[in-house]
Image (cartoon, rainbow, N blue to C red; front, top):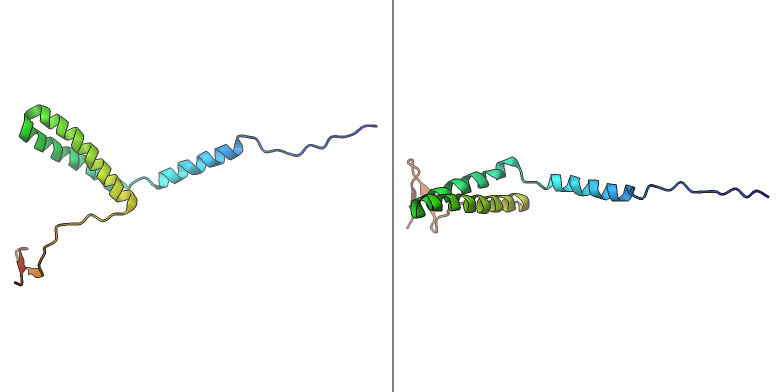
Length: 107
């Protein structure tokens, strides 16, 4: 007597791994900071190299540029990813700005 074997159509073993990897790549691309937040790198490098050059000469300028780019990029990326607003300087008193954009306190 011939017994026919019935086999189920199995998915390839790599398919769930590929779906998981594709979802991870898509999620990581969605979480990248916007191009406007990359300005922290450039400005950090500029300010770091200026201050380092002013204080310690050309070697300080090179080191300050590298450190400033790293810190500026990290702060810009963290603020961009988590949506942390950048706070500007605020006065401790109540007042107003005049026509020349100078702040005056009431007291």
